[in-house]
Amino acid sequence: MAEPNGVIGRLLEELTKLPGIGPKSAERIAHFLLAGDRRNAVSLAGALRAVADKVRACRECHNLTDGDVCGVCADPRRDPAVVCVVETPRDVGSFERAGTFRGRYHVLGGRLAPLDGVGPDRLAFAGLVEKARGGVVREVILATSPTLEGDGTALFAANLLAGTGVSVTRLARGLPSGSSLELANAQMLADALAGRRAF
Amino acid sequence: MAEPNGVIGRLLEELTKLPGIGPKSAERIAHFLLAGDRRNAVSLAGALRAVADKVRACRECHNLTDGDVCGVCADPRRDPAVVCVVETPRDVGSFERAGTFRGRYHVLGGRLAPLDGVGPDRLAFAGLVEKARGGVVREVILATSPTLEGDGTALFAANLLAGTGVSVTRLARGLPSGSSLELANAQMLADALAGRRAF
Image (cartoon, rainbow over all chains, first blue to last red; front, side, top):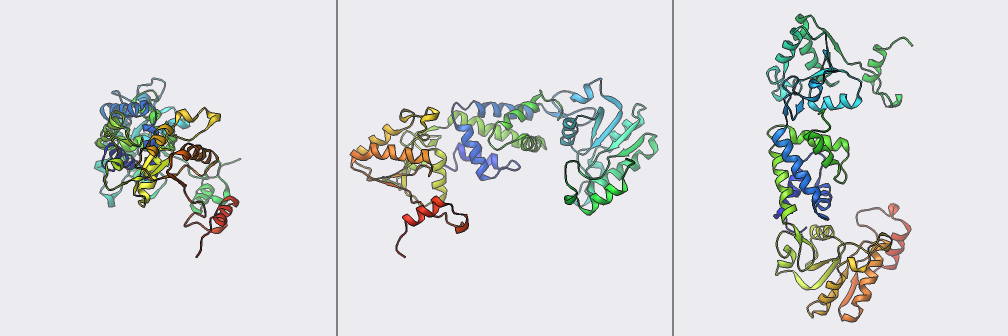
């Protein structure tokens, strides 16, 4: 590891572009890939080429897929009457790992952020309204992030959906399960109180 | 992100093989690579193919290189009379970043670990002795890790080099610069005392 301009240097440079990978991690990874028979480097390269070439947005919900529609939309056991609206494909992954949601998704492609130039035209609101008007959807769950921008995005979507006749809900706010009360901030406690339910 | 067996799933699997990358980091990295025009995925794939195809051991010192000899061995300003013996190419990188060593290296390819089946025949001792006998080398600095196995490896090398006439040294032990005395353990303090120098 001495030539910063050689092929190893280029690999280190590419690795440090990745989120959460600093120079030290990049070097550890590079040495791992360079050890032994390099099968890992070759297969990682192949996996990268495959996603670069094949992955695109699902025609139905804008989730990422390497087919025409994603696995959720293609699955006949998933209820098309309940649509969970999320910001990114990554959020779909989070829900899928949690494993309790049996409806379908609609990926907006981000959240409204007027200061960063992300207006309604940049997000997939039109398709959502169209879907809600289609007659199949009964409920739209707005599952944007519990932040100012996420809430703004949900509010915007709720207004658009107001005339479509579908029921519009949003995720519960409260204490994060598994955490301790000491760690809850004022907003979490306020949400938890406001949303309290009979025991 | 819903098809665990698709191309994204394969990328996640490859990413989690990397040291320090768990399922969450792999997902963050995958989404980073999938965002936008995928130029990063393509260029990382290219960099990986290049190292897998081109990187090999330097003929002189066993450091990693994409040429015939590594940058250090090819550099006429580096003193061939002083050879720093390290365990891995990664250690070469550490010394090069520190930037004070102006000699050359000899990479052993690991450390002696009889319990893991790493005996002297698995490491580049023969080349080291040959180099020491060549008439050019004046000093061999044993820069193995300050651990039991590293020390054992250094002792083994020192014994091999005993008859060659070169001066054999090892790295200083003491307090780690920038740390605090409170954090030093008994061995560090013992080393620091034993190695004390006139002020």
